[in-house]
Image (cartoon, rainbow, N blue to C red):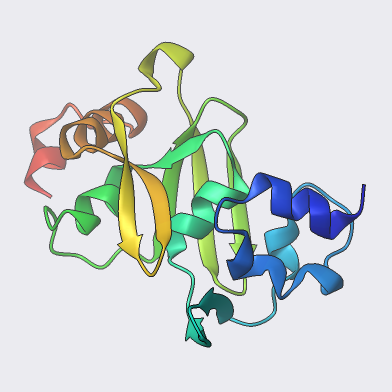
Amino acid sequence: MRLSSRLASCLPERSILLKFASSFRAGPLPVRSISSAEAYIPWPRRIKKINPHPFLIANRIQHASYVSLQSALAYYGLIPERVPMTTSVTTGRPLLQKTPLGEYQFRHIQTDWFQAYLKIDLGLGQTAFVATPEKALLDLIYLEPNSETPAFCLN
């Protein structure tokens, strides 16, 4: 099976990364090969130039994952800080992935806790799985050391 057809079969938003399919090398993470922060998606009667959302890229790097922790809390406007790294939760192995499009961290969580996430519309035909605000907070408490202390809660 050619890489571009394998890529097309695994990406619902396949047109976002299809432009780069000819430059991909064989491997499980084709996002590593993207050298530009821009992608093209077909629009009726024209081509629209967009930047892929970091949540979309995170969901494509690790398929069994959803965006959570500080990234989801910042998305919902519950923390005032800018979050420099997109953090997701997965049932697979932990991973830190650096790409030209940003840094992505994947934290391991038990299969029983892998729930309470929604498919969020990010605009321009992009969707991603993101934890609910309550679940993002629970994941943060579960995964961060010393998160049960009052000092952590005040920060």
